[in-house]
Image (cartoon, rainbow, N blue to C red; front, side):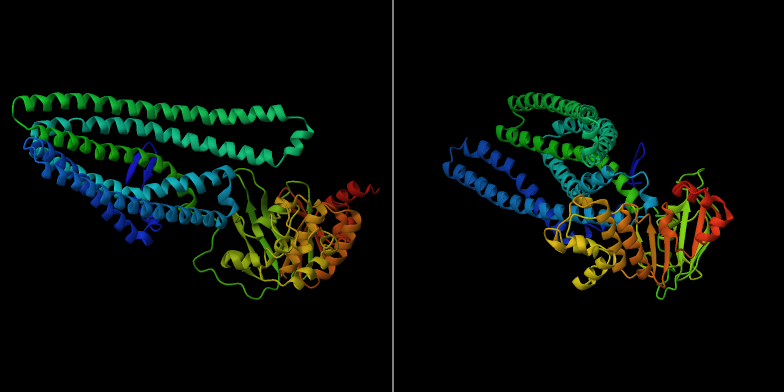
Length: 585
């Protein structure tokens, strides 16, 4: 373990992974180290110039020596200014590039993780991961080498210099170091715990903002603005409370450091003055020793501060490790094969599945979807209908059993190839804040304008699109809020049609349509899905009268199956659904 305290740990193996973001900038990092080393070395010459002035120029009244010493100091200042500017620019470039690449890699990993891996992860968590966590890890990766190497080097060099001037005072100075170590460890441990709580509070606050900002209409409808404002204050007060606690710890740590430094400074002033009075050292040596002792404290405090940052970075590593290093239960196998020709035959064999342990959704399910035919799945809410789709697209994998596509276990295919087989239309339509055309071609970015229009005509969407202000170039609001629910669903159908999939899946795809639009789309879908495998998840039985097979799910099992007329004649579960919807006797 690189670090281990109360559950906070950064292993060398994990660190190697994160160092891949810094490795391309190894030359820049080395250049920063070189420039910083020069700056450190230059800073050590200033006390020597001061000693020359106080021990030689002043006592000897040597104006020429004084002038050259001052000019030398000014030249050193100018050179240091240029080096400091260069070091700051290089460091800024390095930090920005590593941060954005780490943040982008985090986002890319998140969008590839399966929904099963995202369970329990909120939008607030993701924002903290992409912003704060990435920033803390970046700071650790880009600053650690410089902080450790330069400050240790500076400390050792200064130790040698002060030792040669006054061994006793140097030893006394070293006695303050254990205090810094103990104080830093104590406060850093508490800050790390507070940082984790603060990040969680920030995440909850962001989640609340996102949720409520998307539902202002509901809040206004029920006149709950005071209640929501009070809830907002509670979230903010939690963050403020943790921030104050963190601030108090920082203030206490700074006070302790300042107290020890001032006591040490007063003692140093007395001790050096005593040495001068006794004739053991000169005034110039006092000035030089004072400056060197001040400098020797800086690397000690810098290393103490780095340790505190390390504790906070460990929390960020811990959070990012759950993204980068956690095993995704749904992923390509090592021997995954491409998926070329698809006939569309699907078979669920003795499938068990549960989202949460102890709560079975599917139980020993056997189900066959015939290639080129229309299969409808009906059942009560919670029967497992949408779960079938989640498993078929491998958003989740079965707990037991297997799912076959054309006789081959779907886990044997590349995920991207498998999902490319399906054209999915769900009840909850996802639309992005971009043009209508871009939304429709989202799954087929290279589609031509003519192909987009053709798909929209098939989905009965072209007529309303051309009436929009900019037609197909009209930019939609987030989630398509400037469209009606029926219009949004027709765009989703057009998007699926444009992909020309081998298998269509419609999960309550016409639930938001009026009767006339439903009739038109139903007729269009017959043509669109002709000769292709299609699966309909339906509550409205009027949409599946033409299905070749209707499967009734009940408590995760197939209760009965057959075509529309056959199931009515059996007078089983399907017949009862039919009676409920149509009031038949």
